Length: 196
Length: 113
Image (tube, rainbow over all chains, first blue to last red; front, side, top):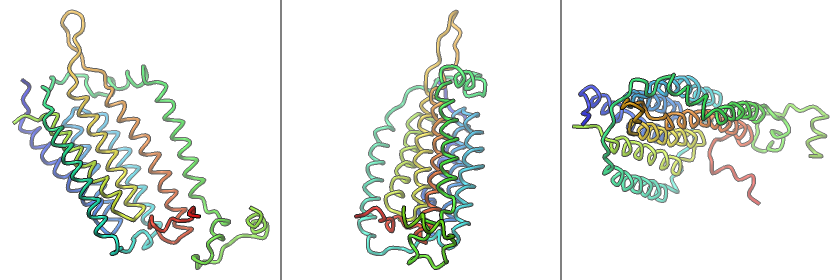
């Protein structure tokens, strides 16, 4: 057997509680900036859980990509939208929404109860497991092609995000009835918009 | 008390269910995107835990080496895809807000005939 040390148990209990609590907070709060902060706490607690699983490289990637990029991107967009990021409560659909959420949670709980019975013995941690060298050798060996494709995906996503988020005055003009700001399109743009 | 694979799988399922419920119940596009991140994170946790419980490999001469990091590499790619998804998703939310002056997902009926 390979028993868990008390530190491991304490770390798991702490980070698991924090992860579940912050996940609930992420979907429950009304003010989006609070949701983003909850997501931040959730991502941090998952990084802690990765340490208990001897995944040190992934812990670093989680901190760099999620905390450093994704959560910051969310906060940027929320601040860019200002008060528009918050949506009003819709009272009409509260019963179907509650029933839907409860059924999803029920299905999740039943799957979790089945999974809880899975109890294989935990192997001893090999010294190189989860290290940068261990993952790097795999990443630049058998997983070379997906790794290169991932870089293409990220470039495409960057270009796509830029072109989608770029201010497009033709599209703004289409919805002038909901747009209090005057559309700043010049004559040639207007002509193109009418033809298009 | 021993930490088992079941502990991590249950935790991951609970987080995934919270994310799925949030995605279905909330009408705010930003919170829907955050719920997707929760679900992706739950799956990542499950993959890392499964990789940790993979048995050691017996080499020549009785030496044991670490199992191949399939789960870790998969999680690495999932994180890359999640970052791309967040960037494109938030760009769409920004563009949608310019059109409709709201981020409510049920106001997105421009394609309805």
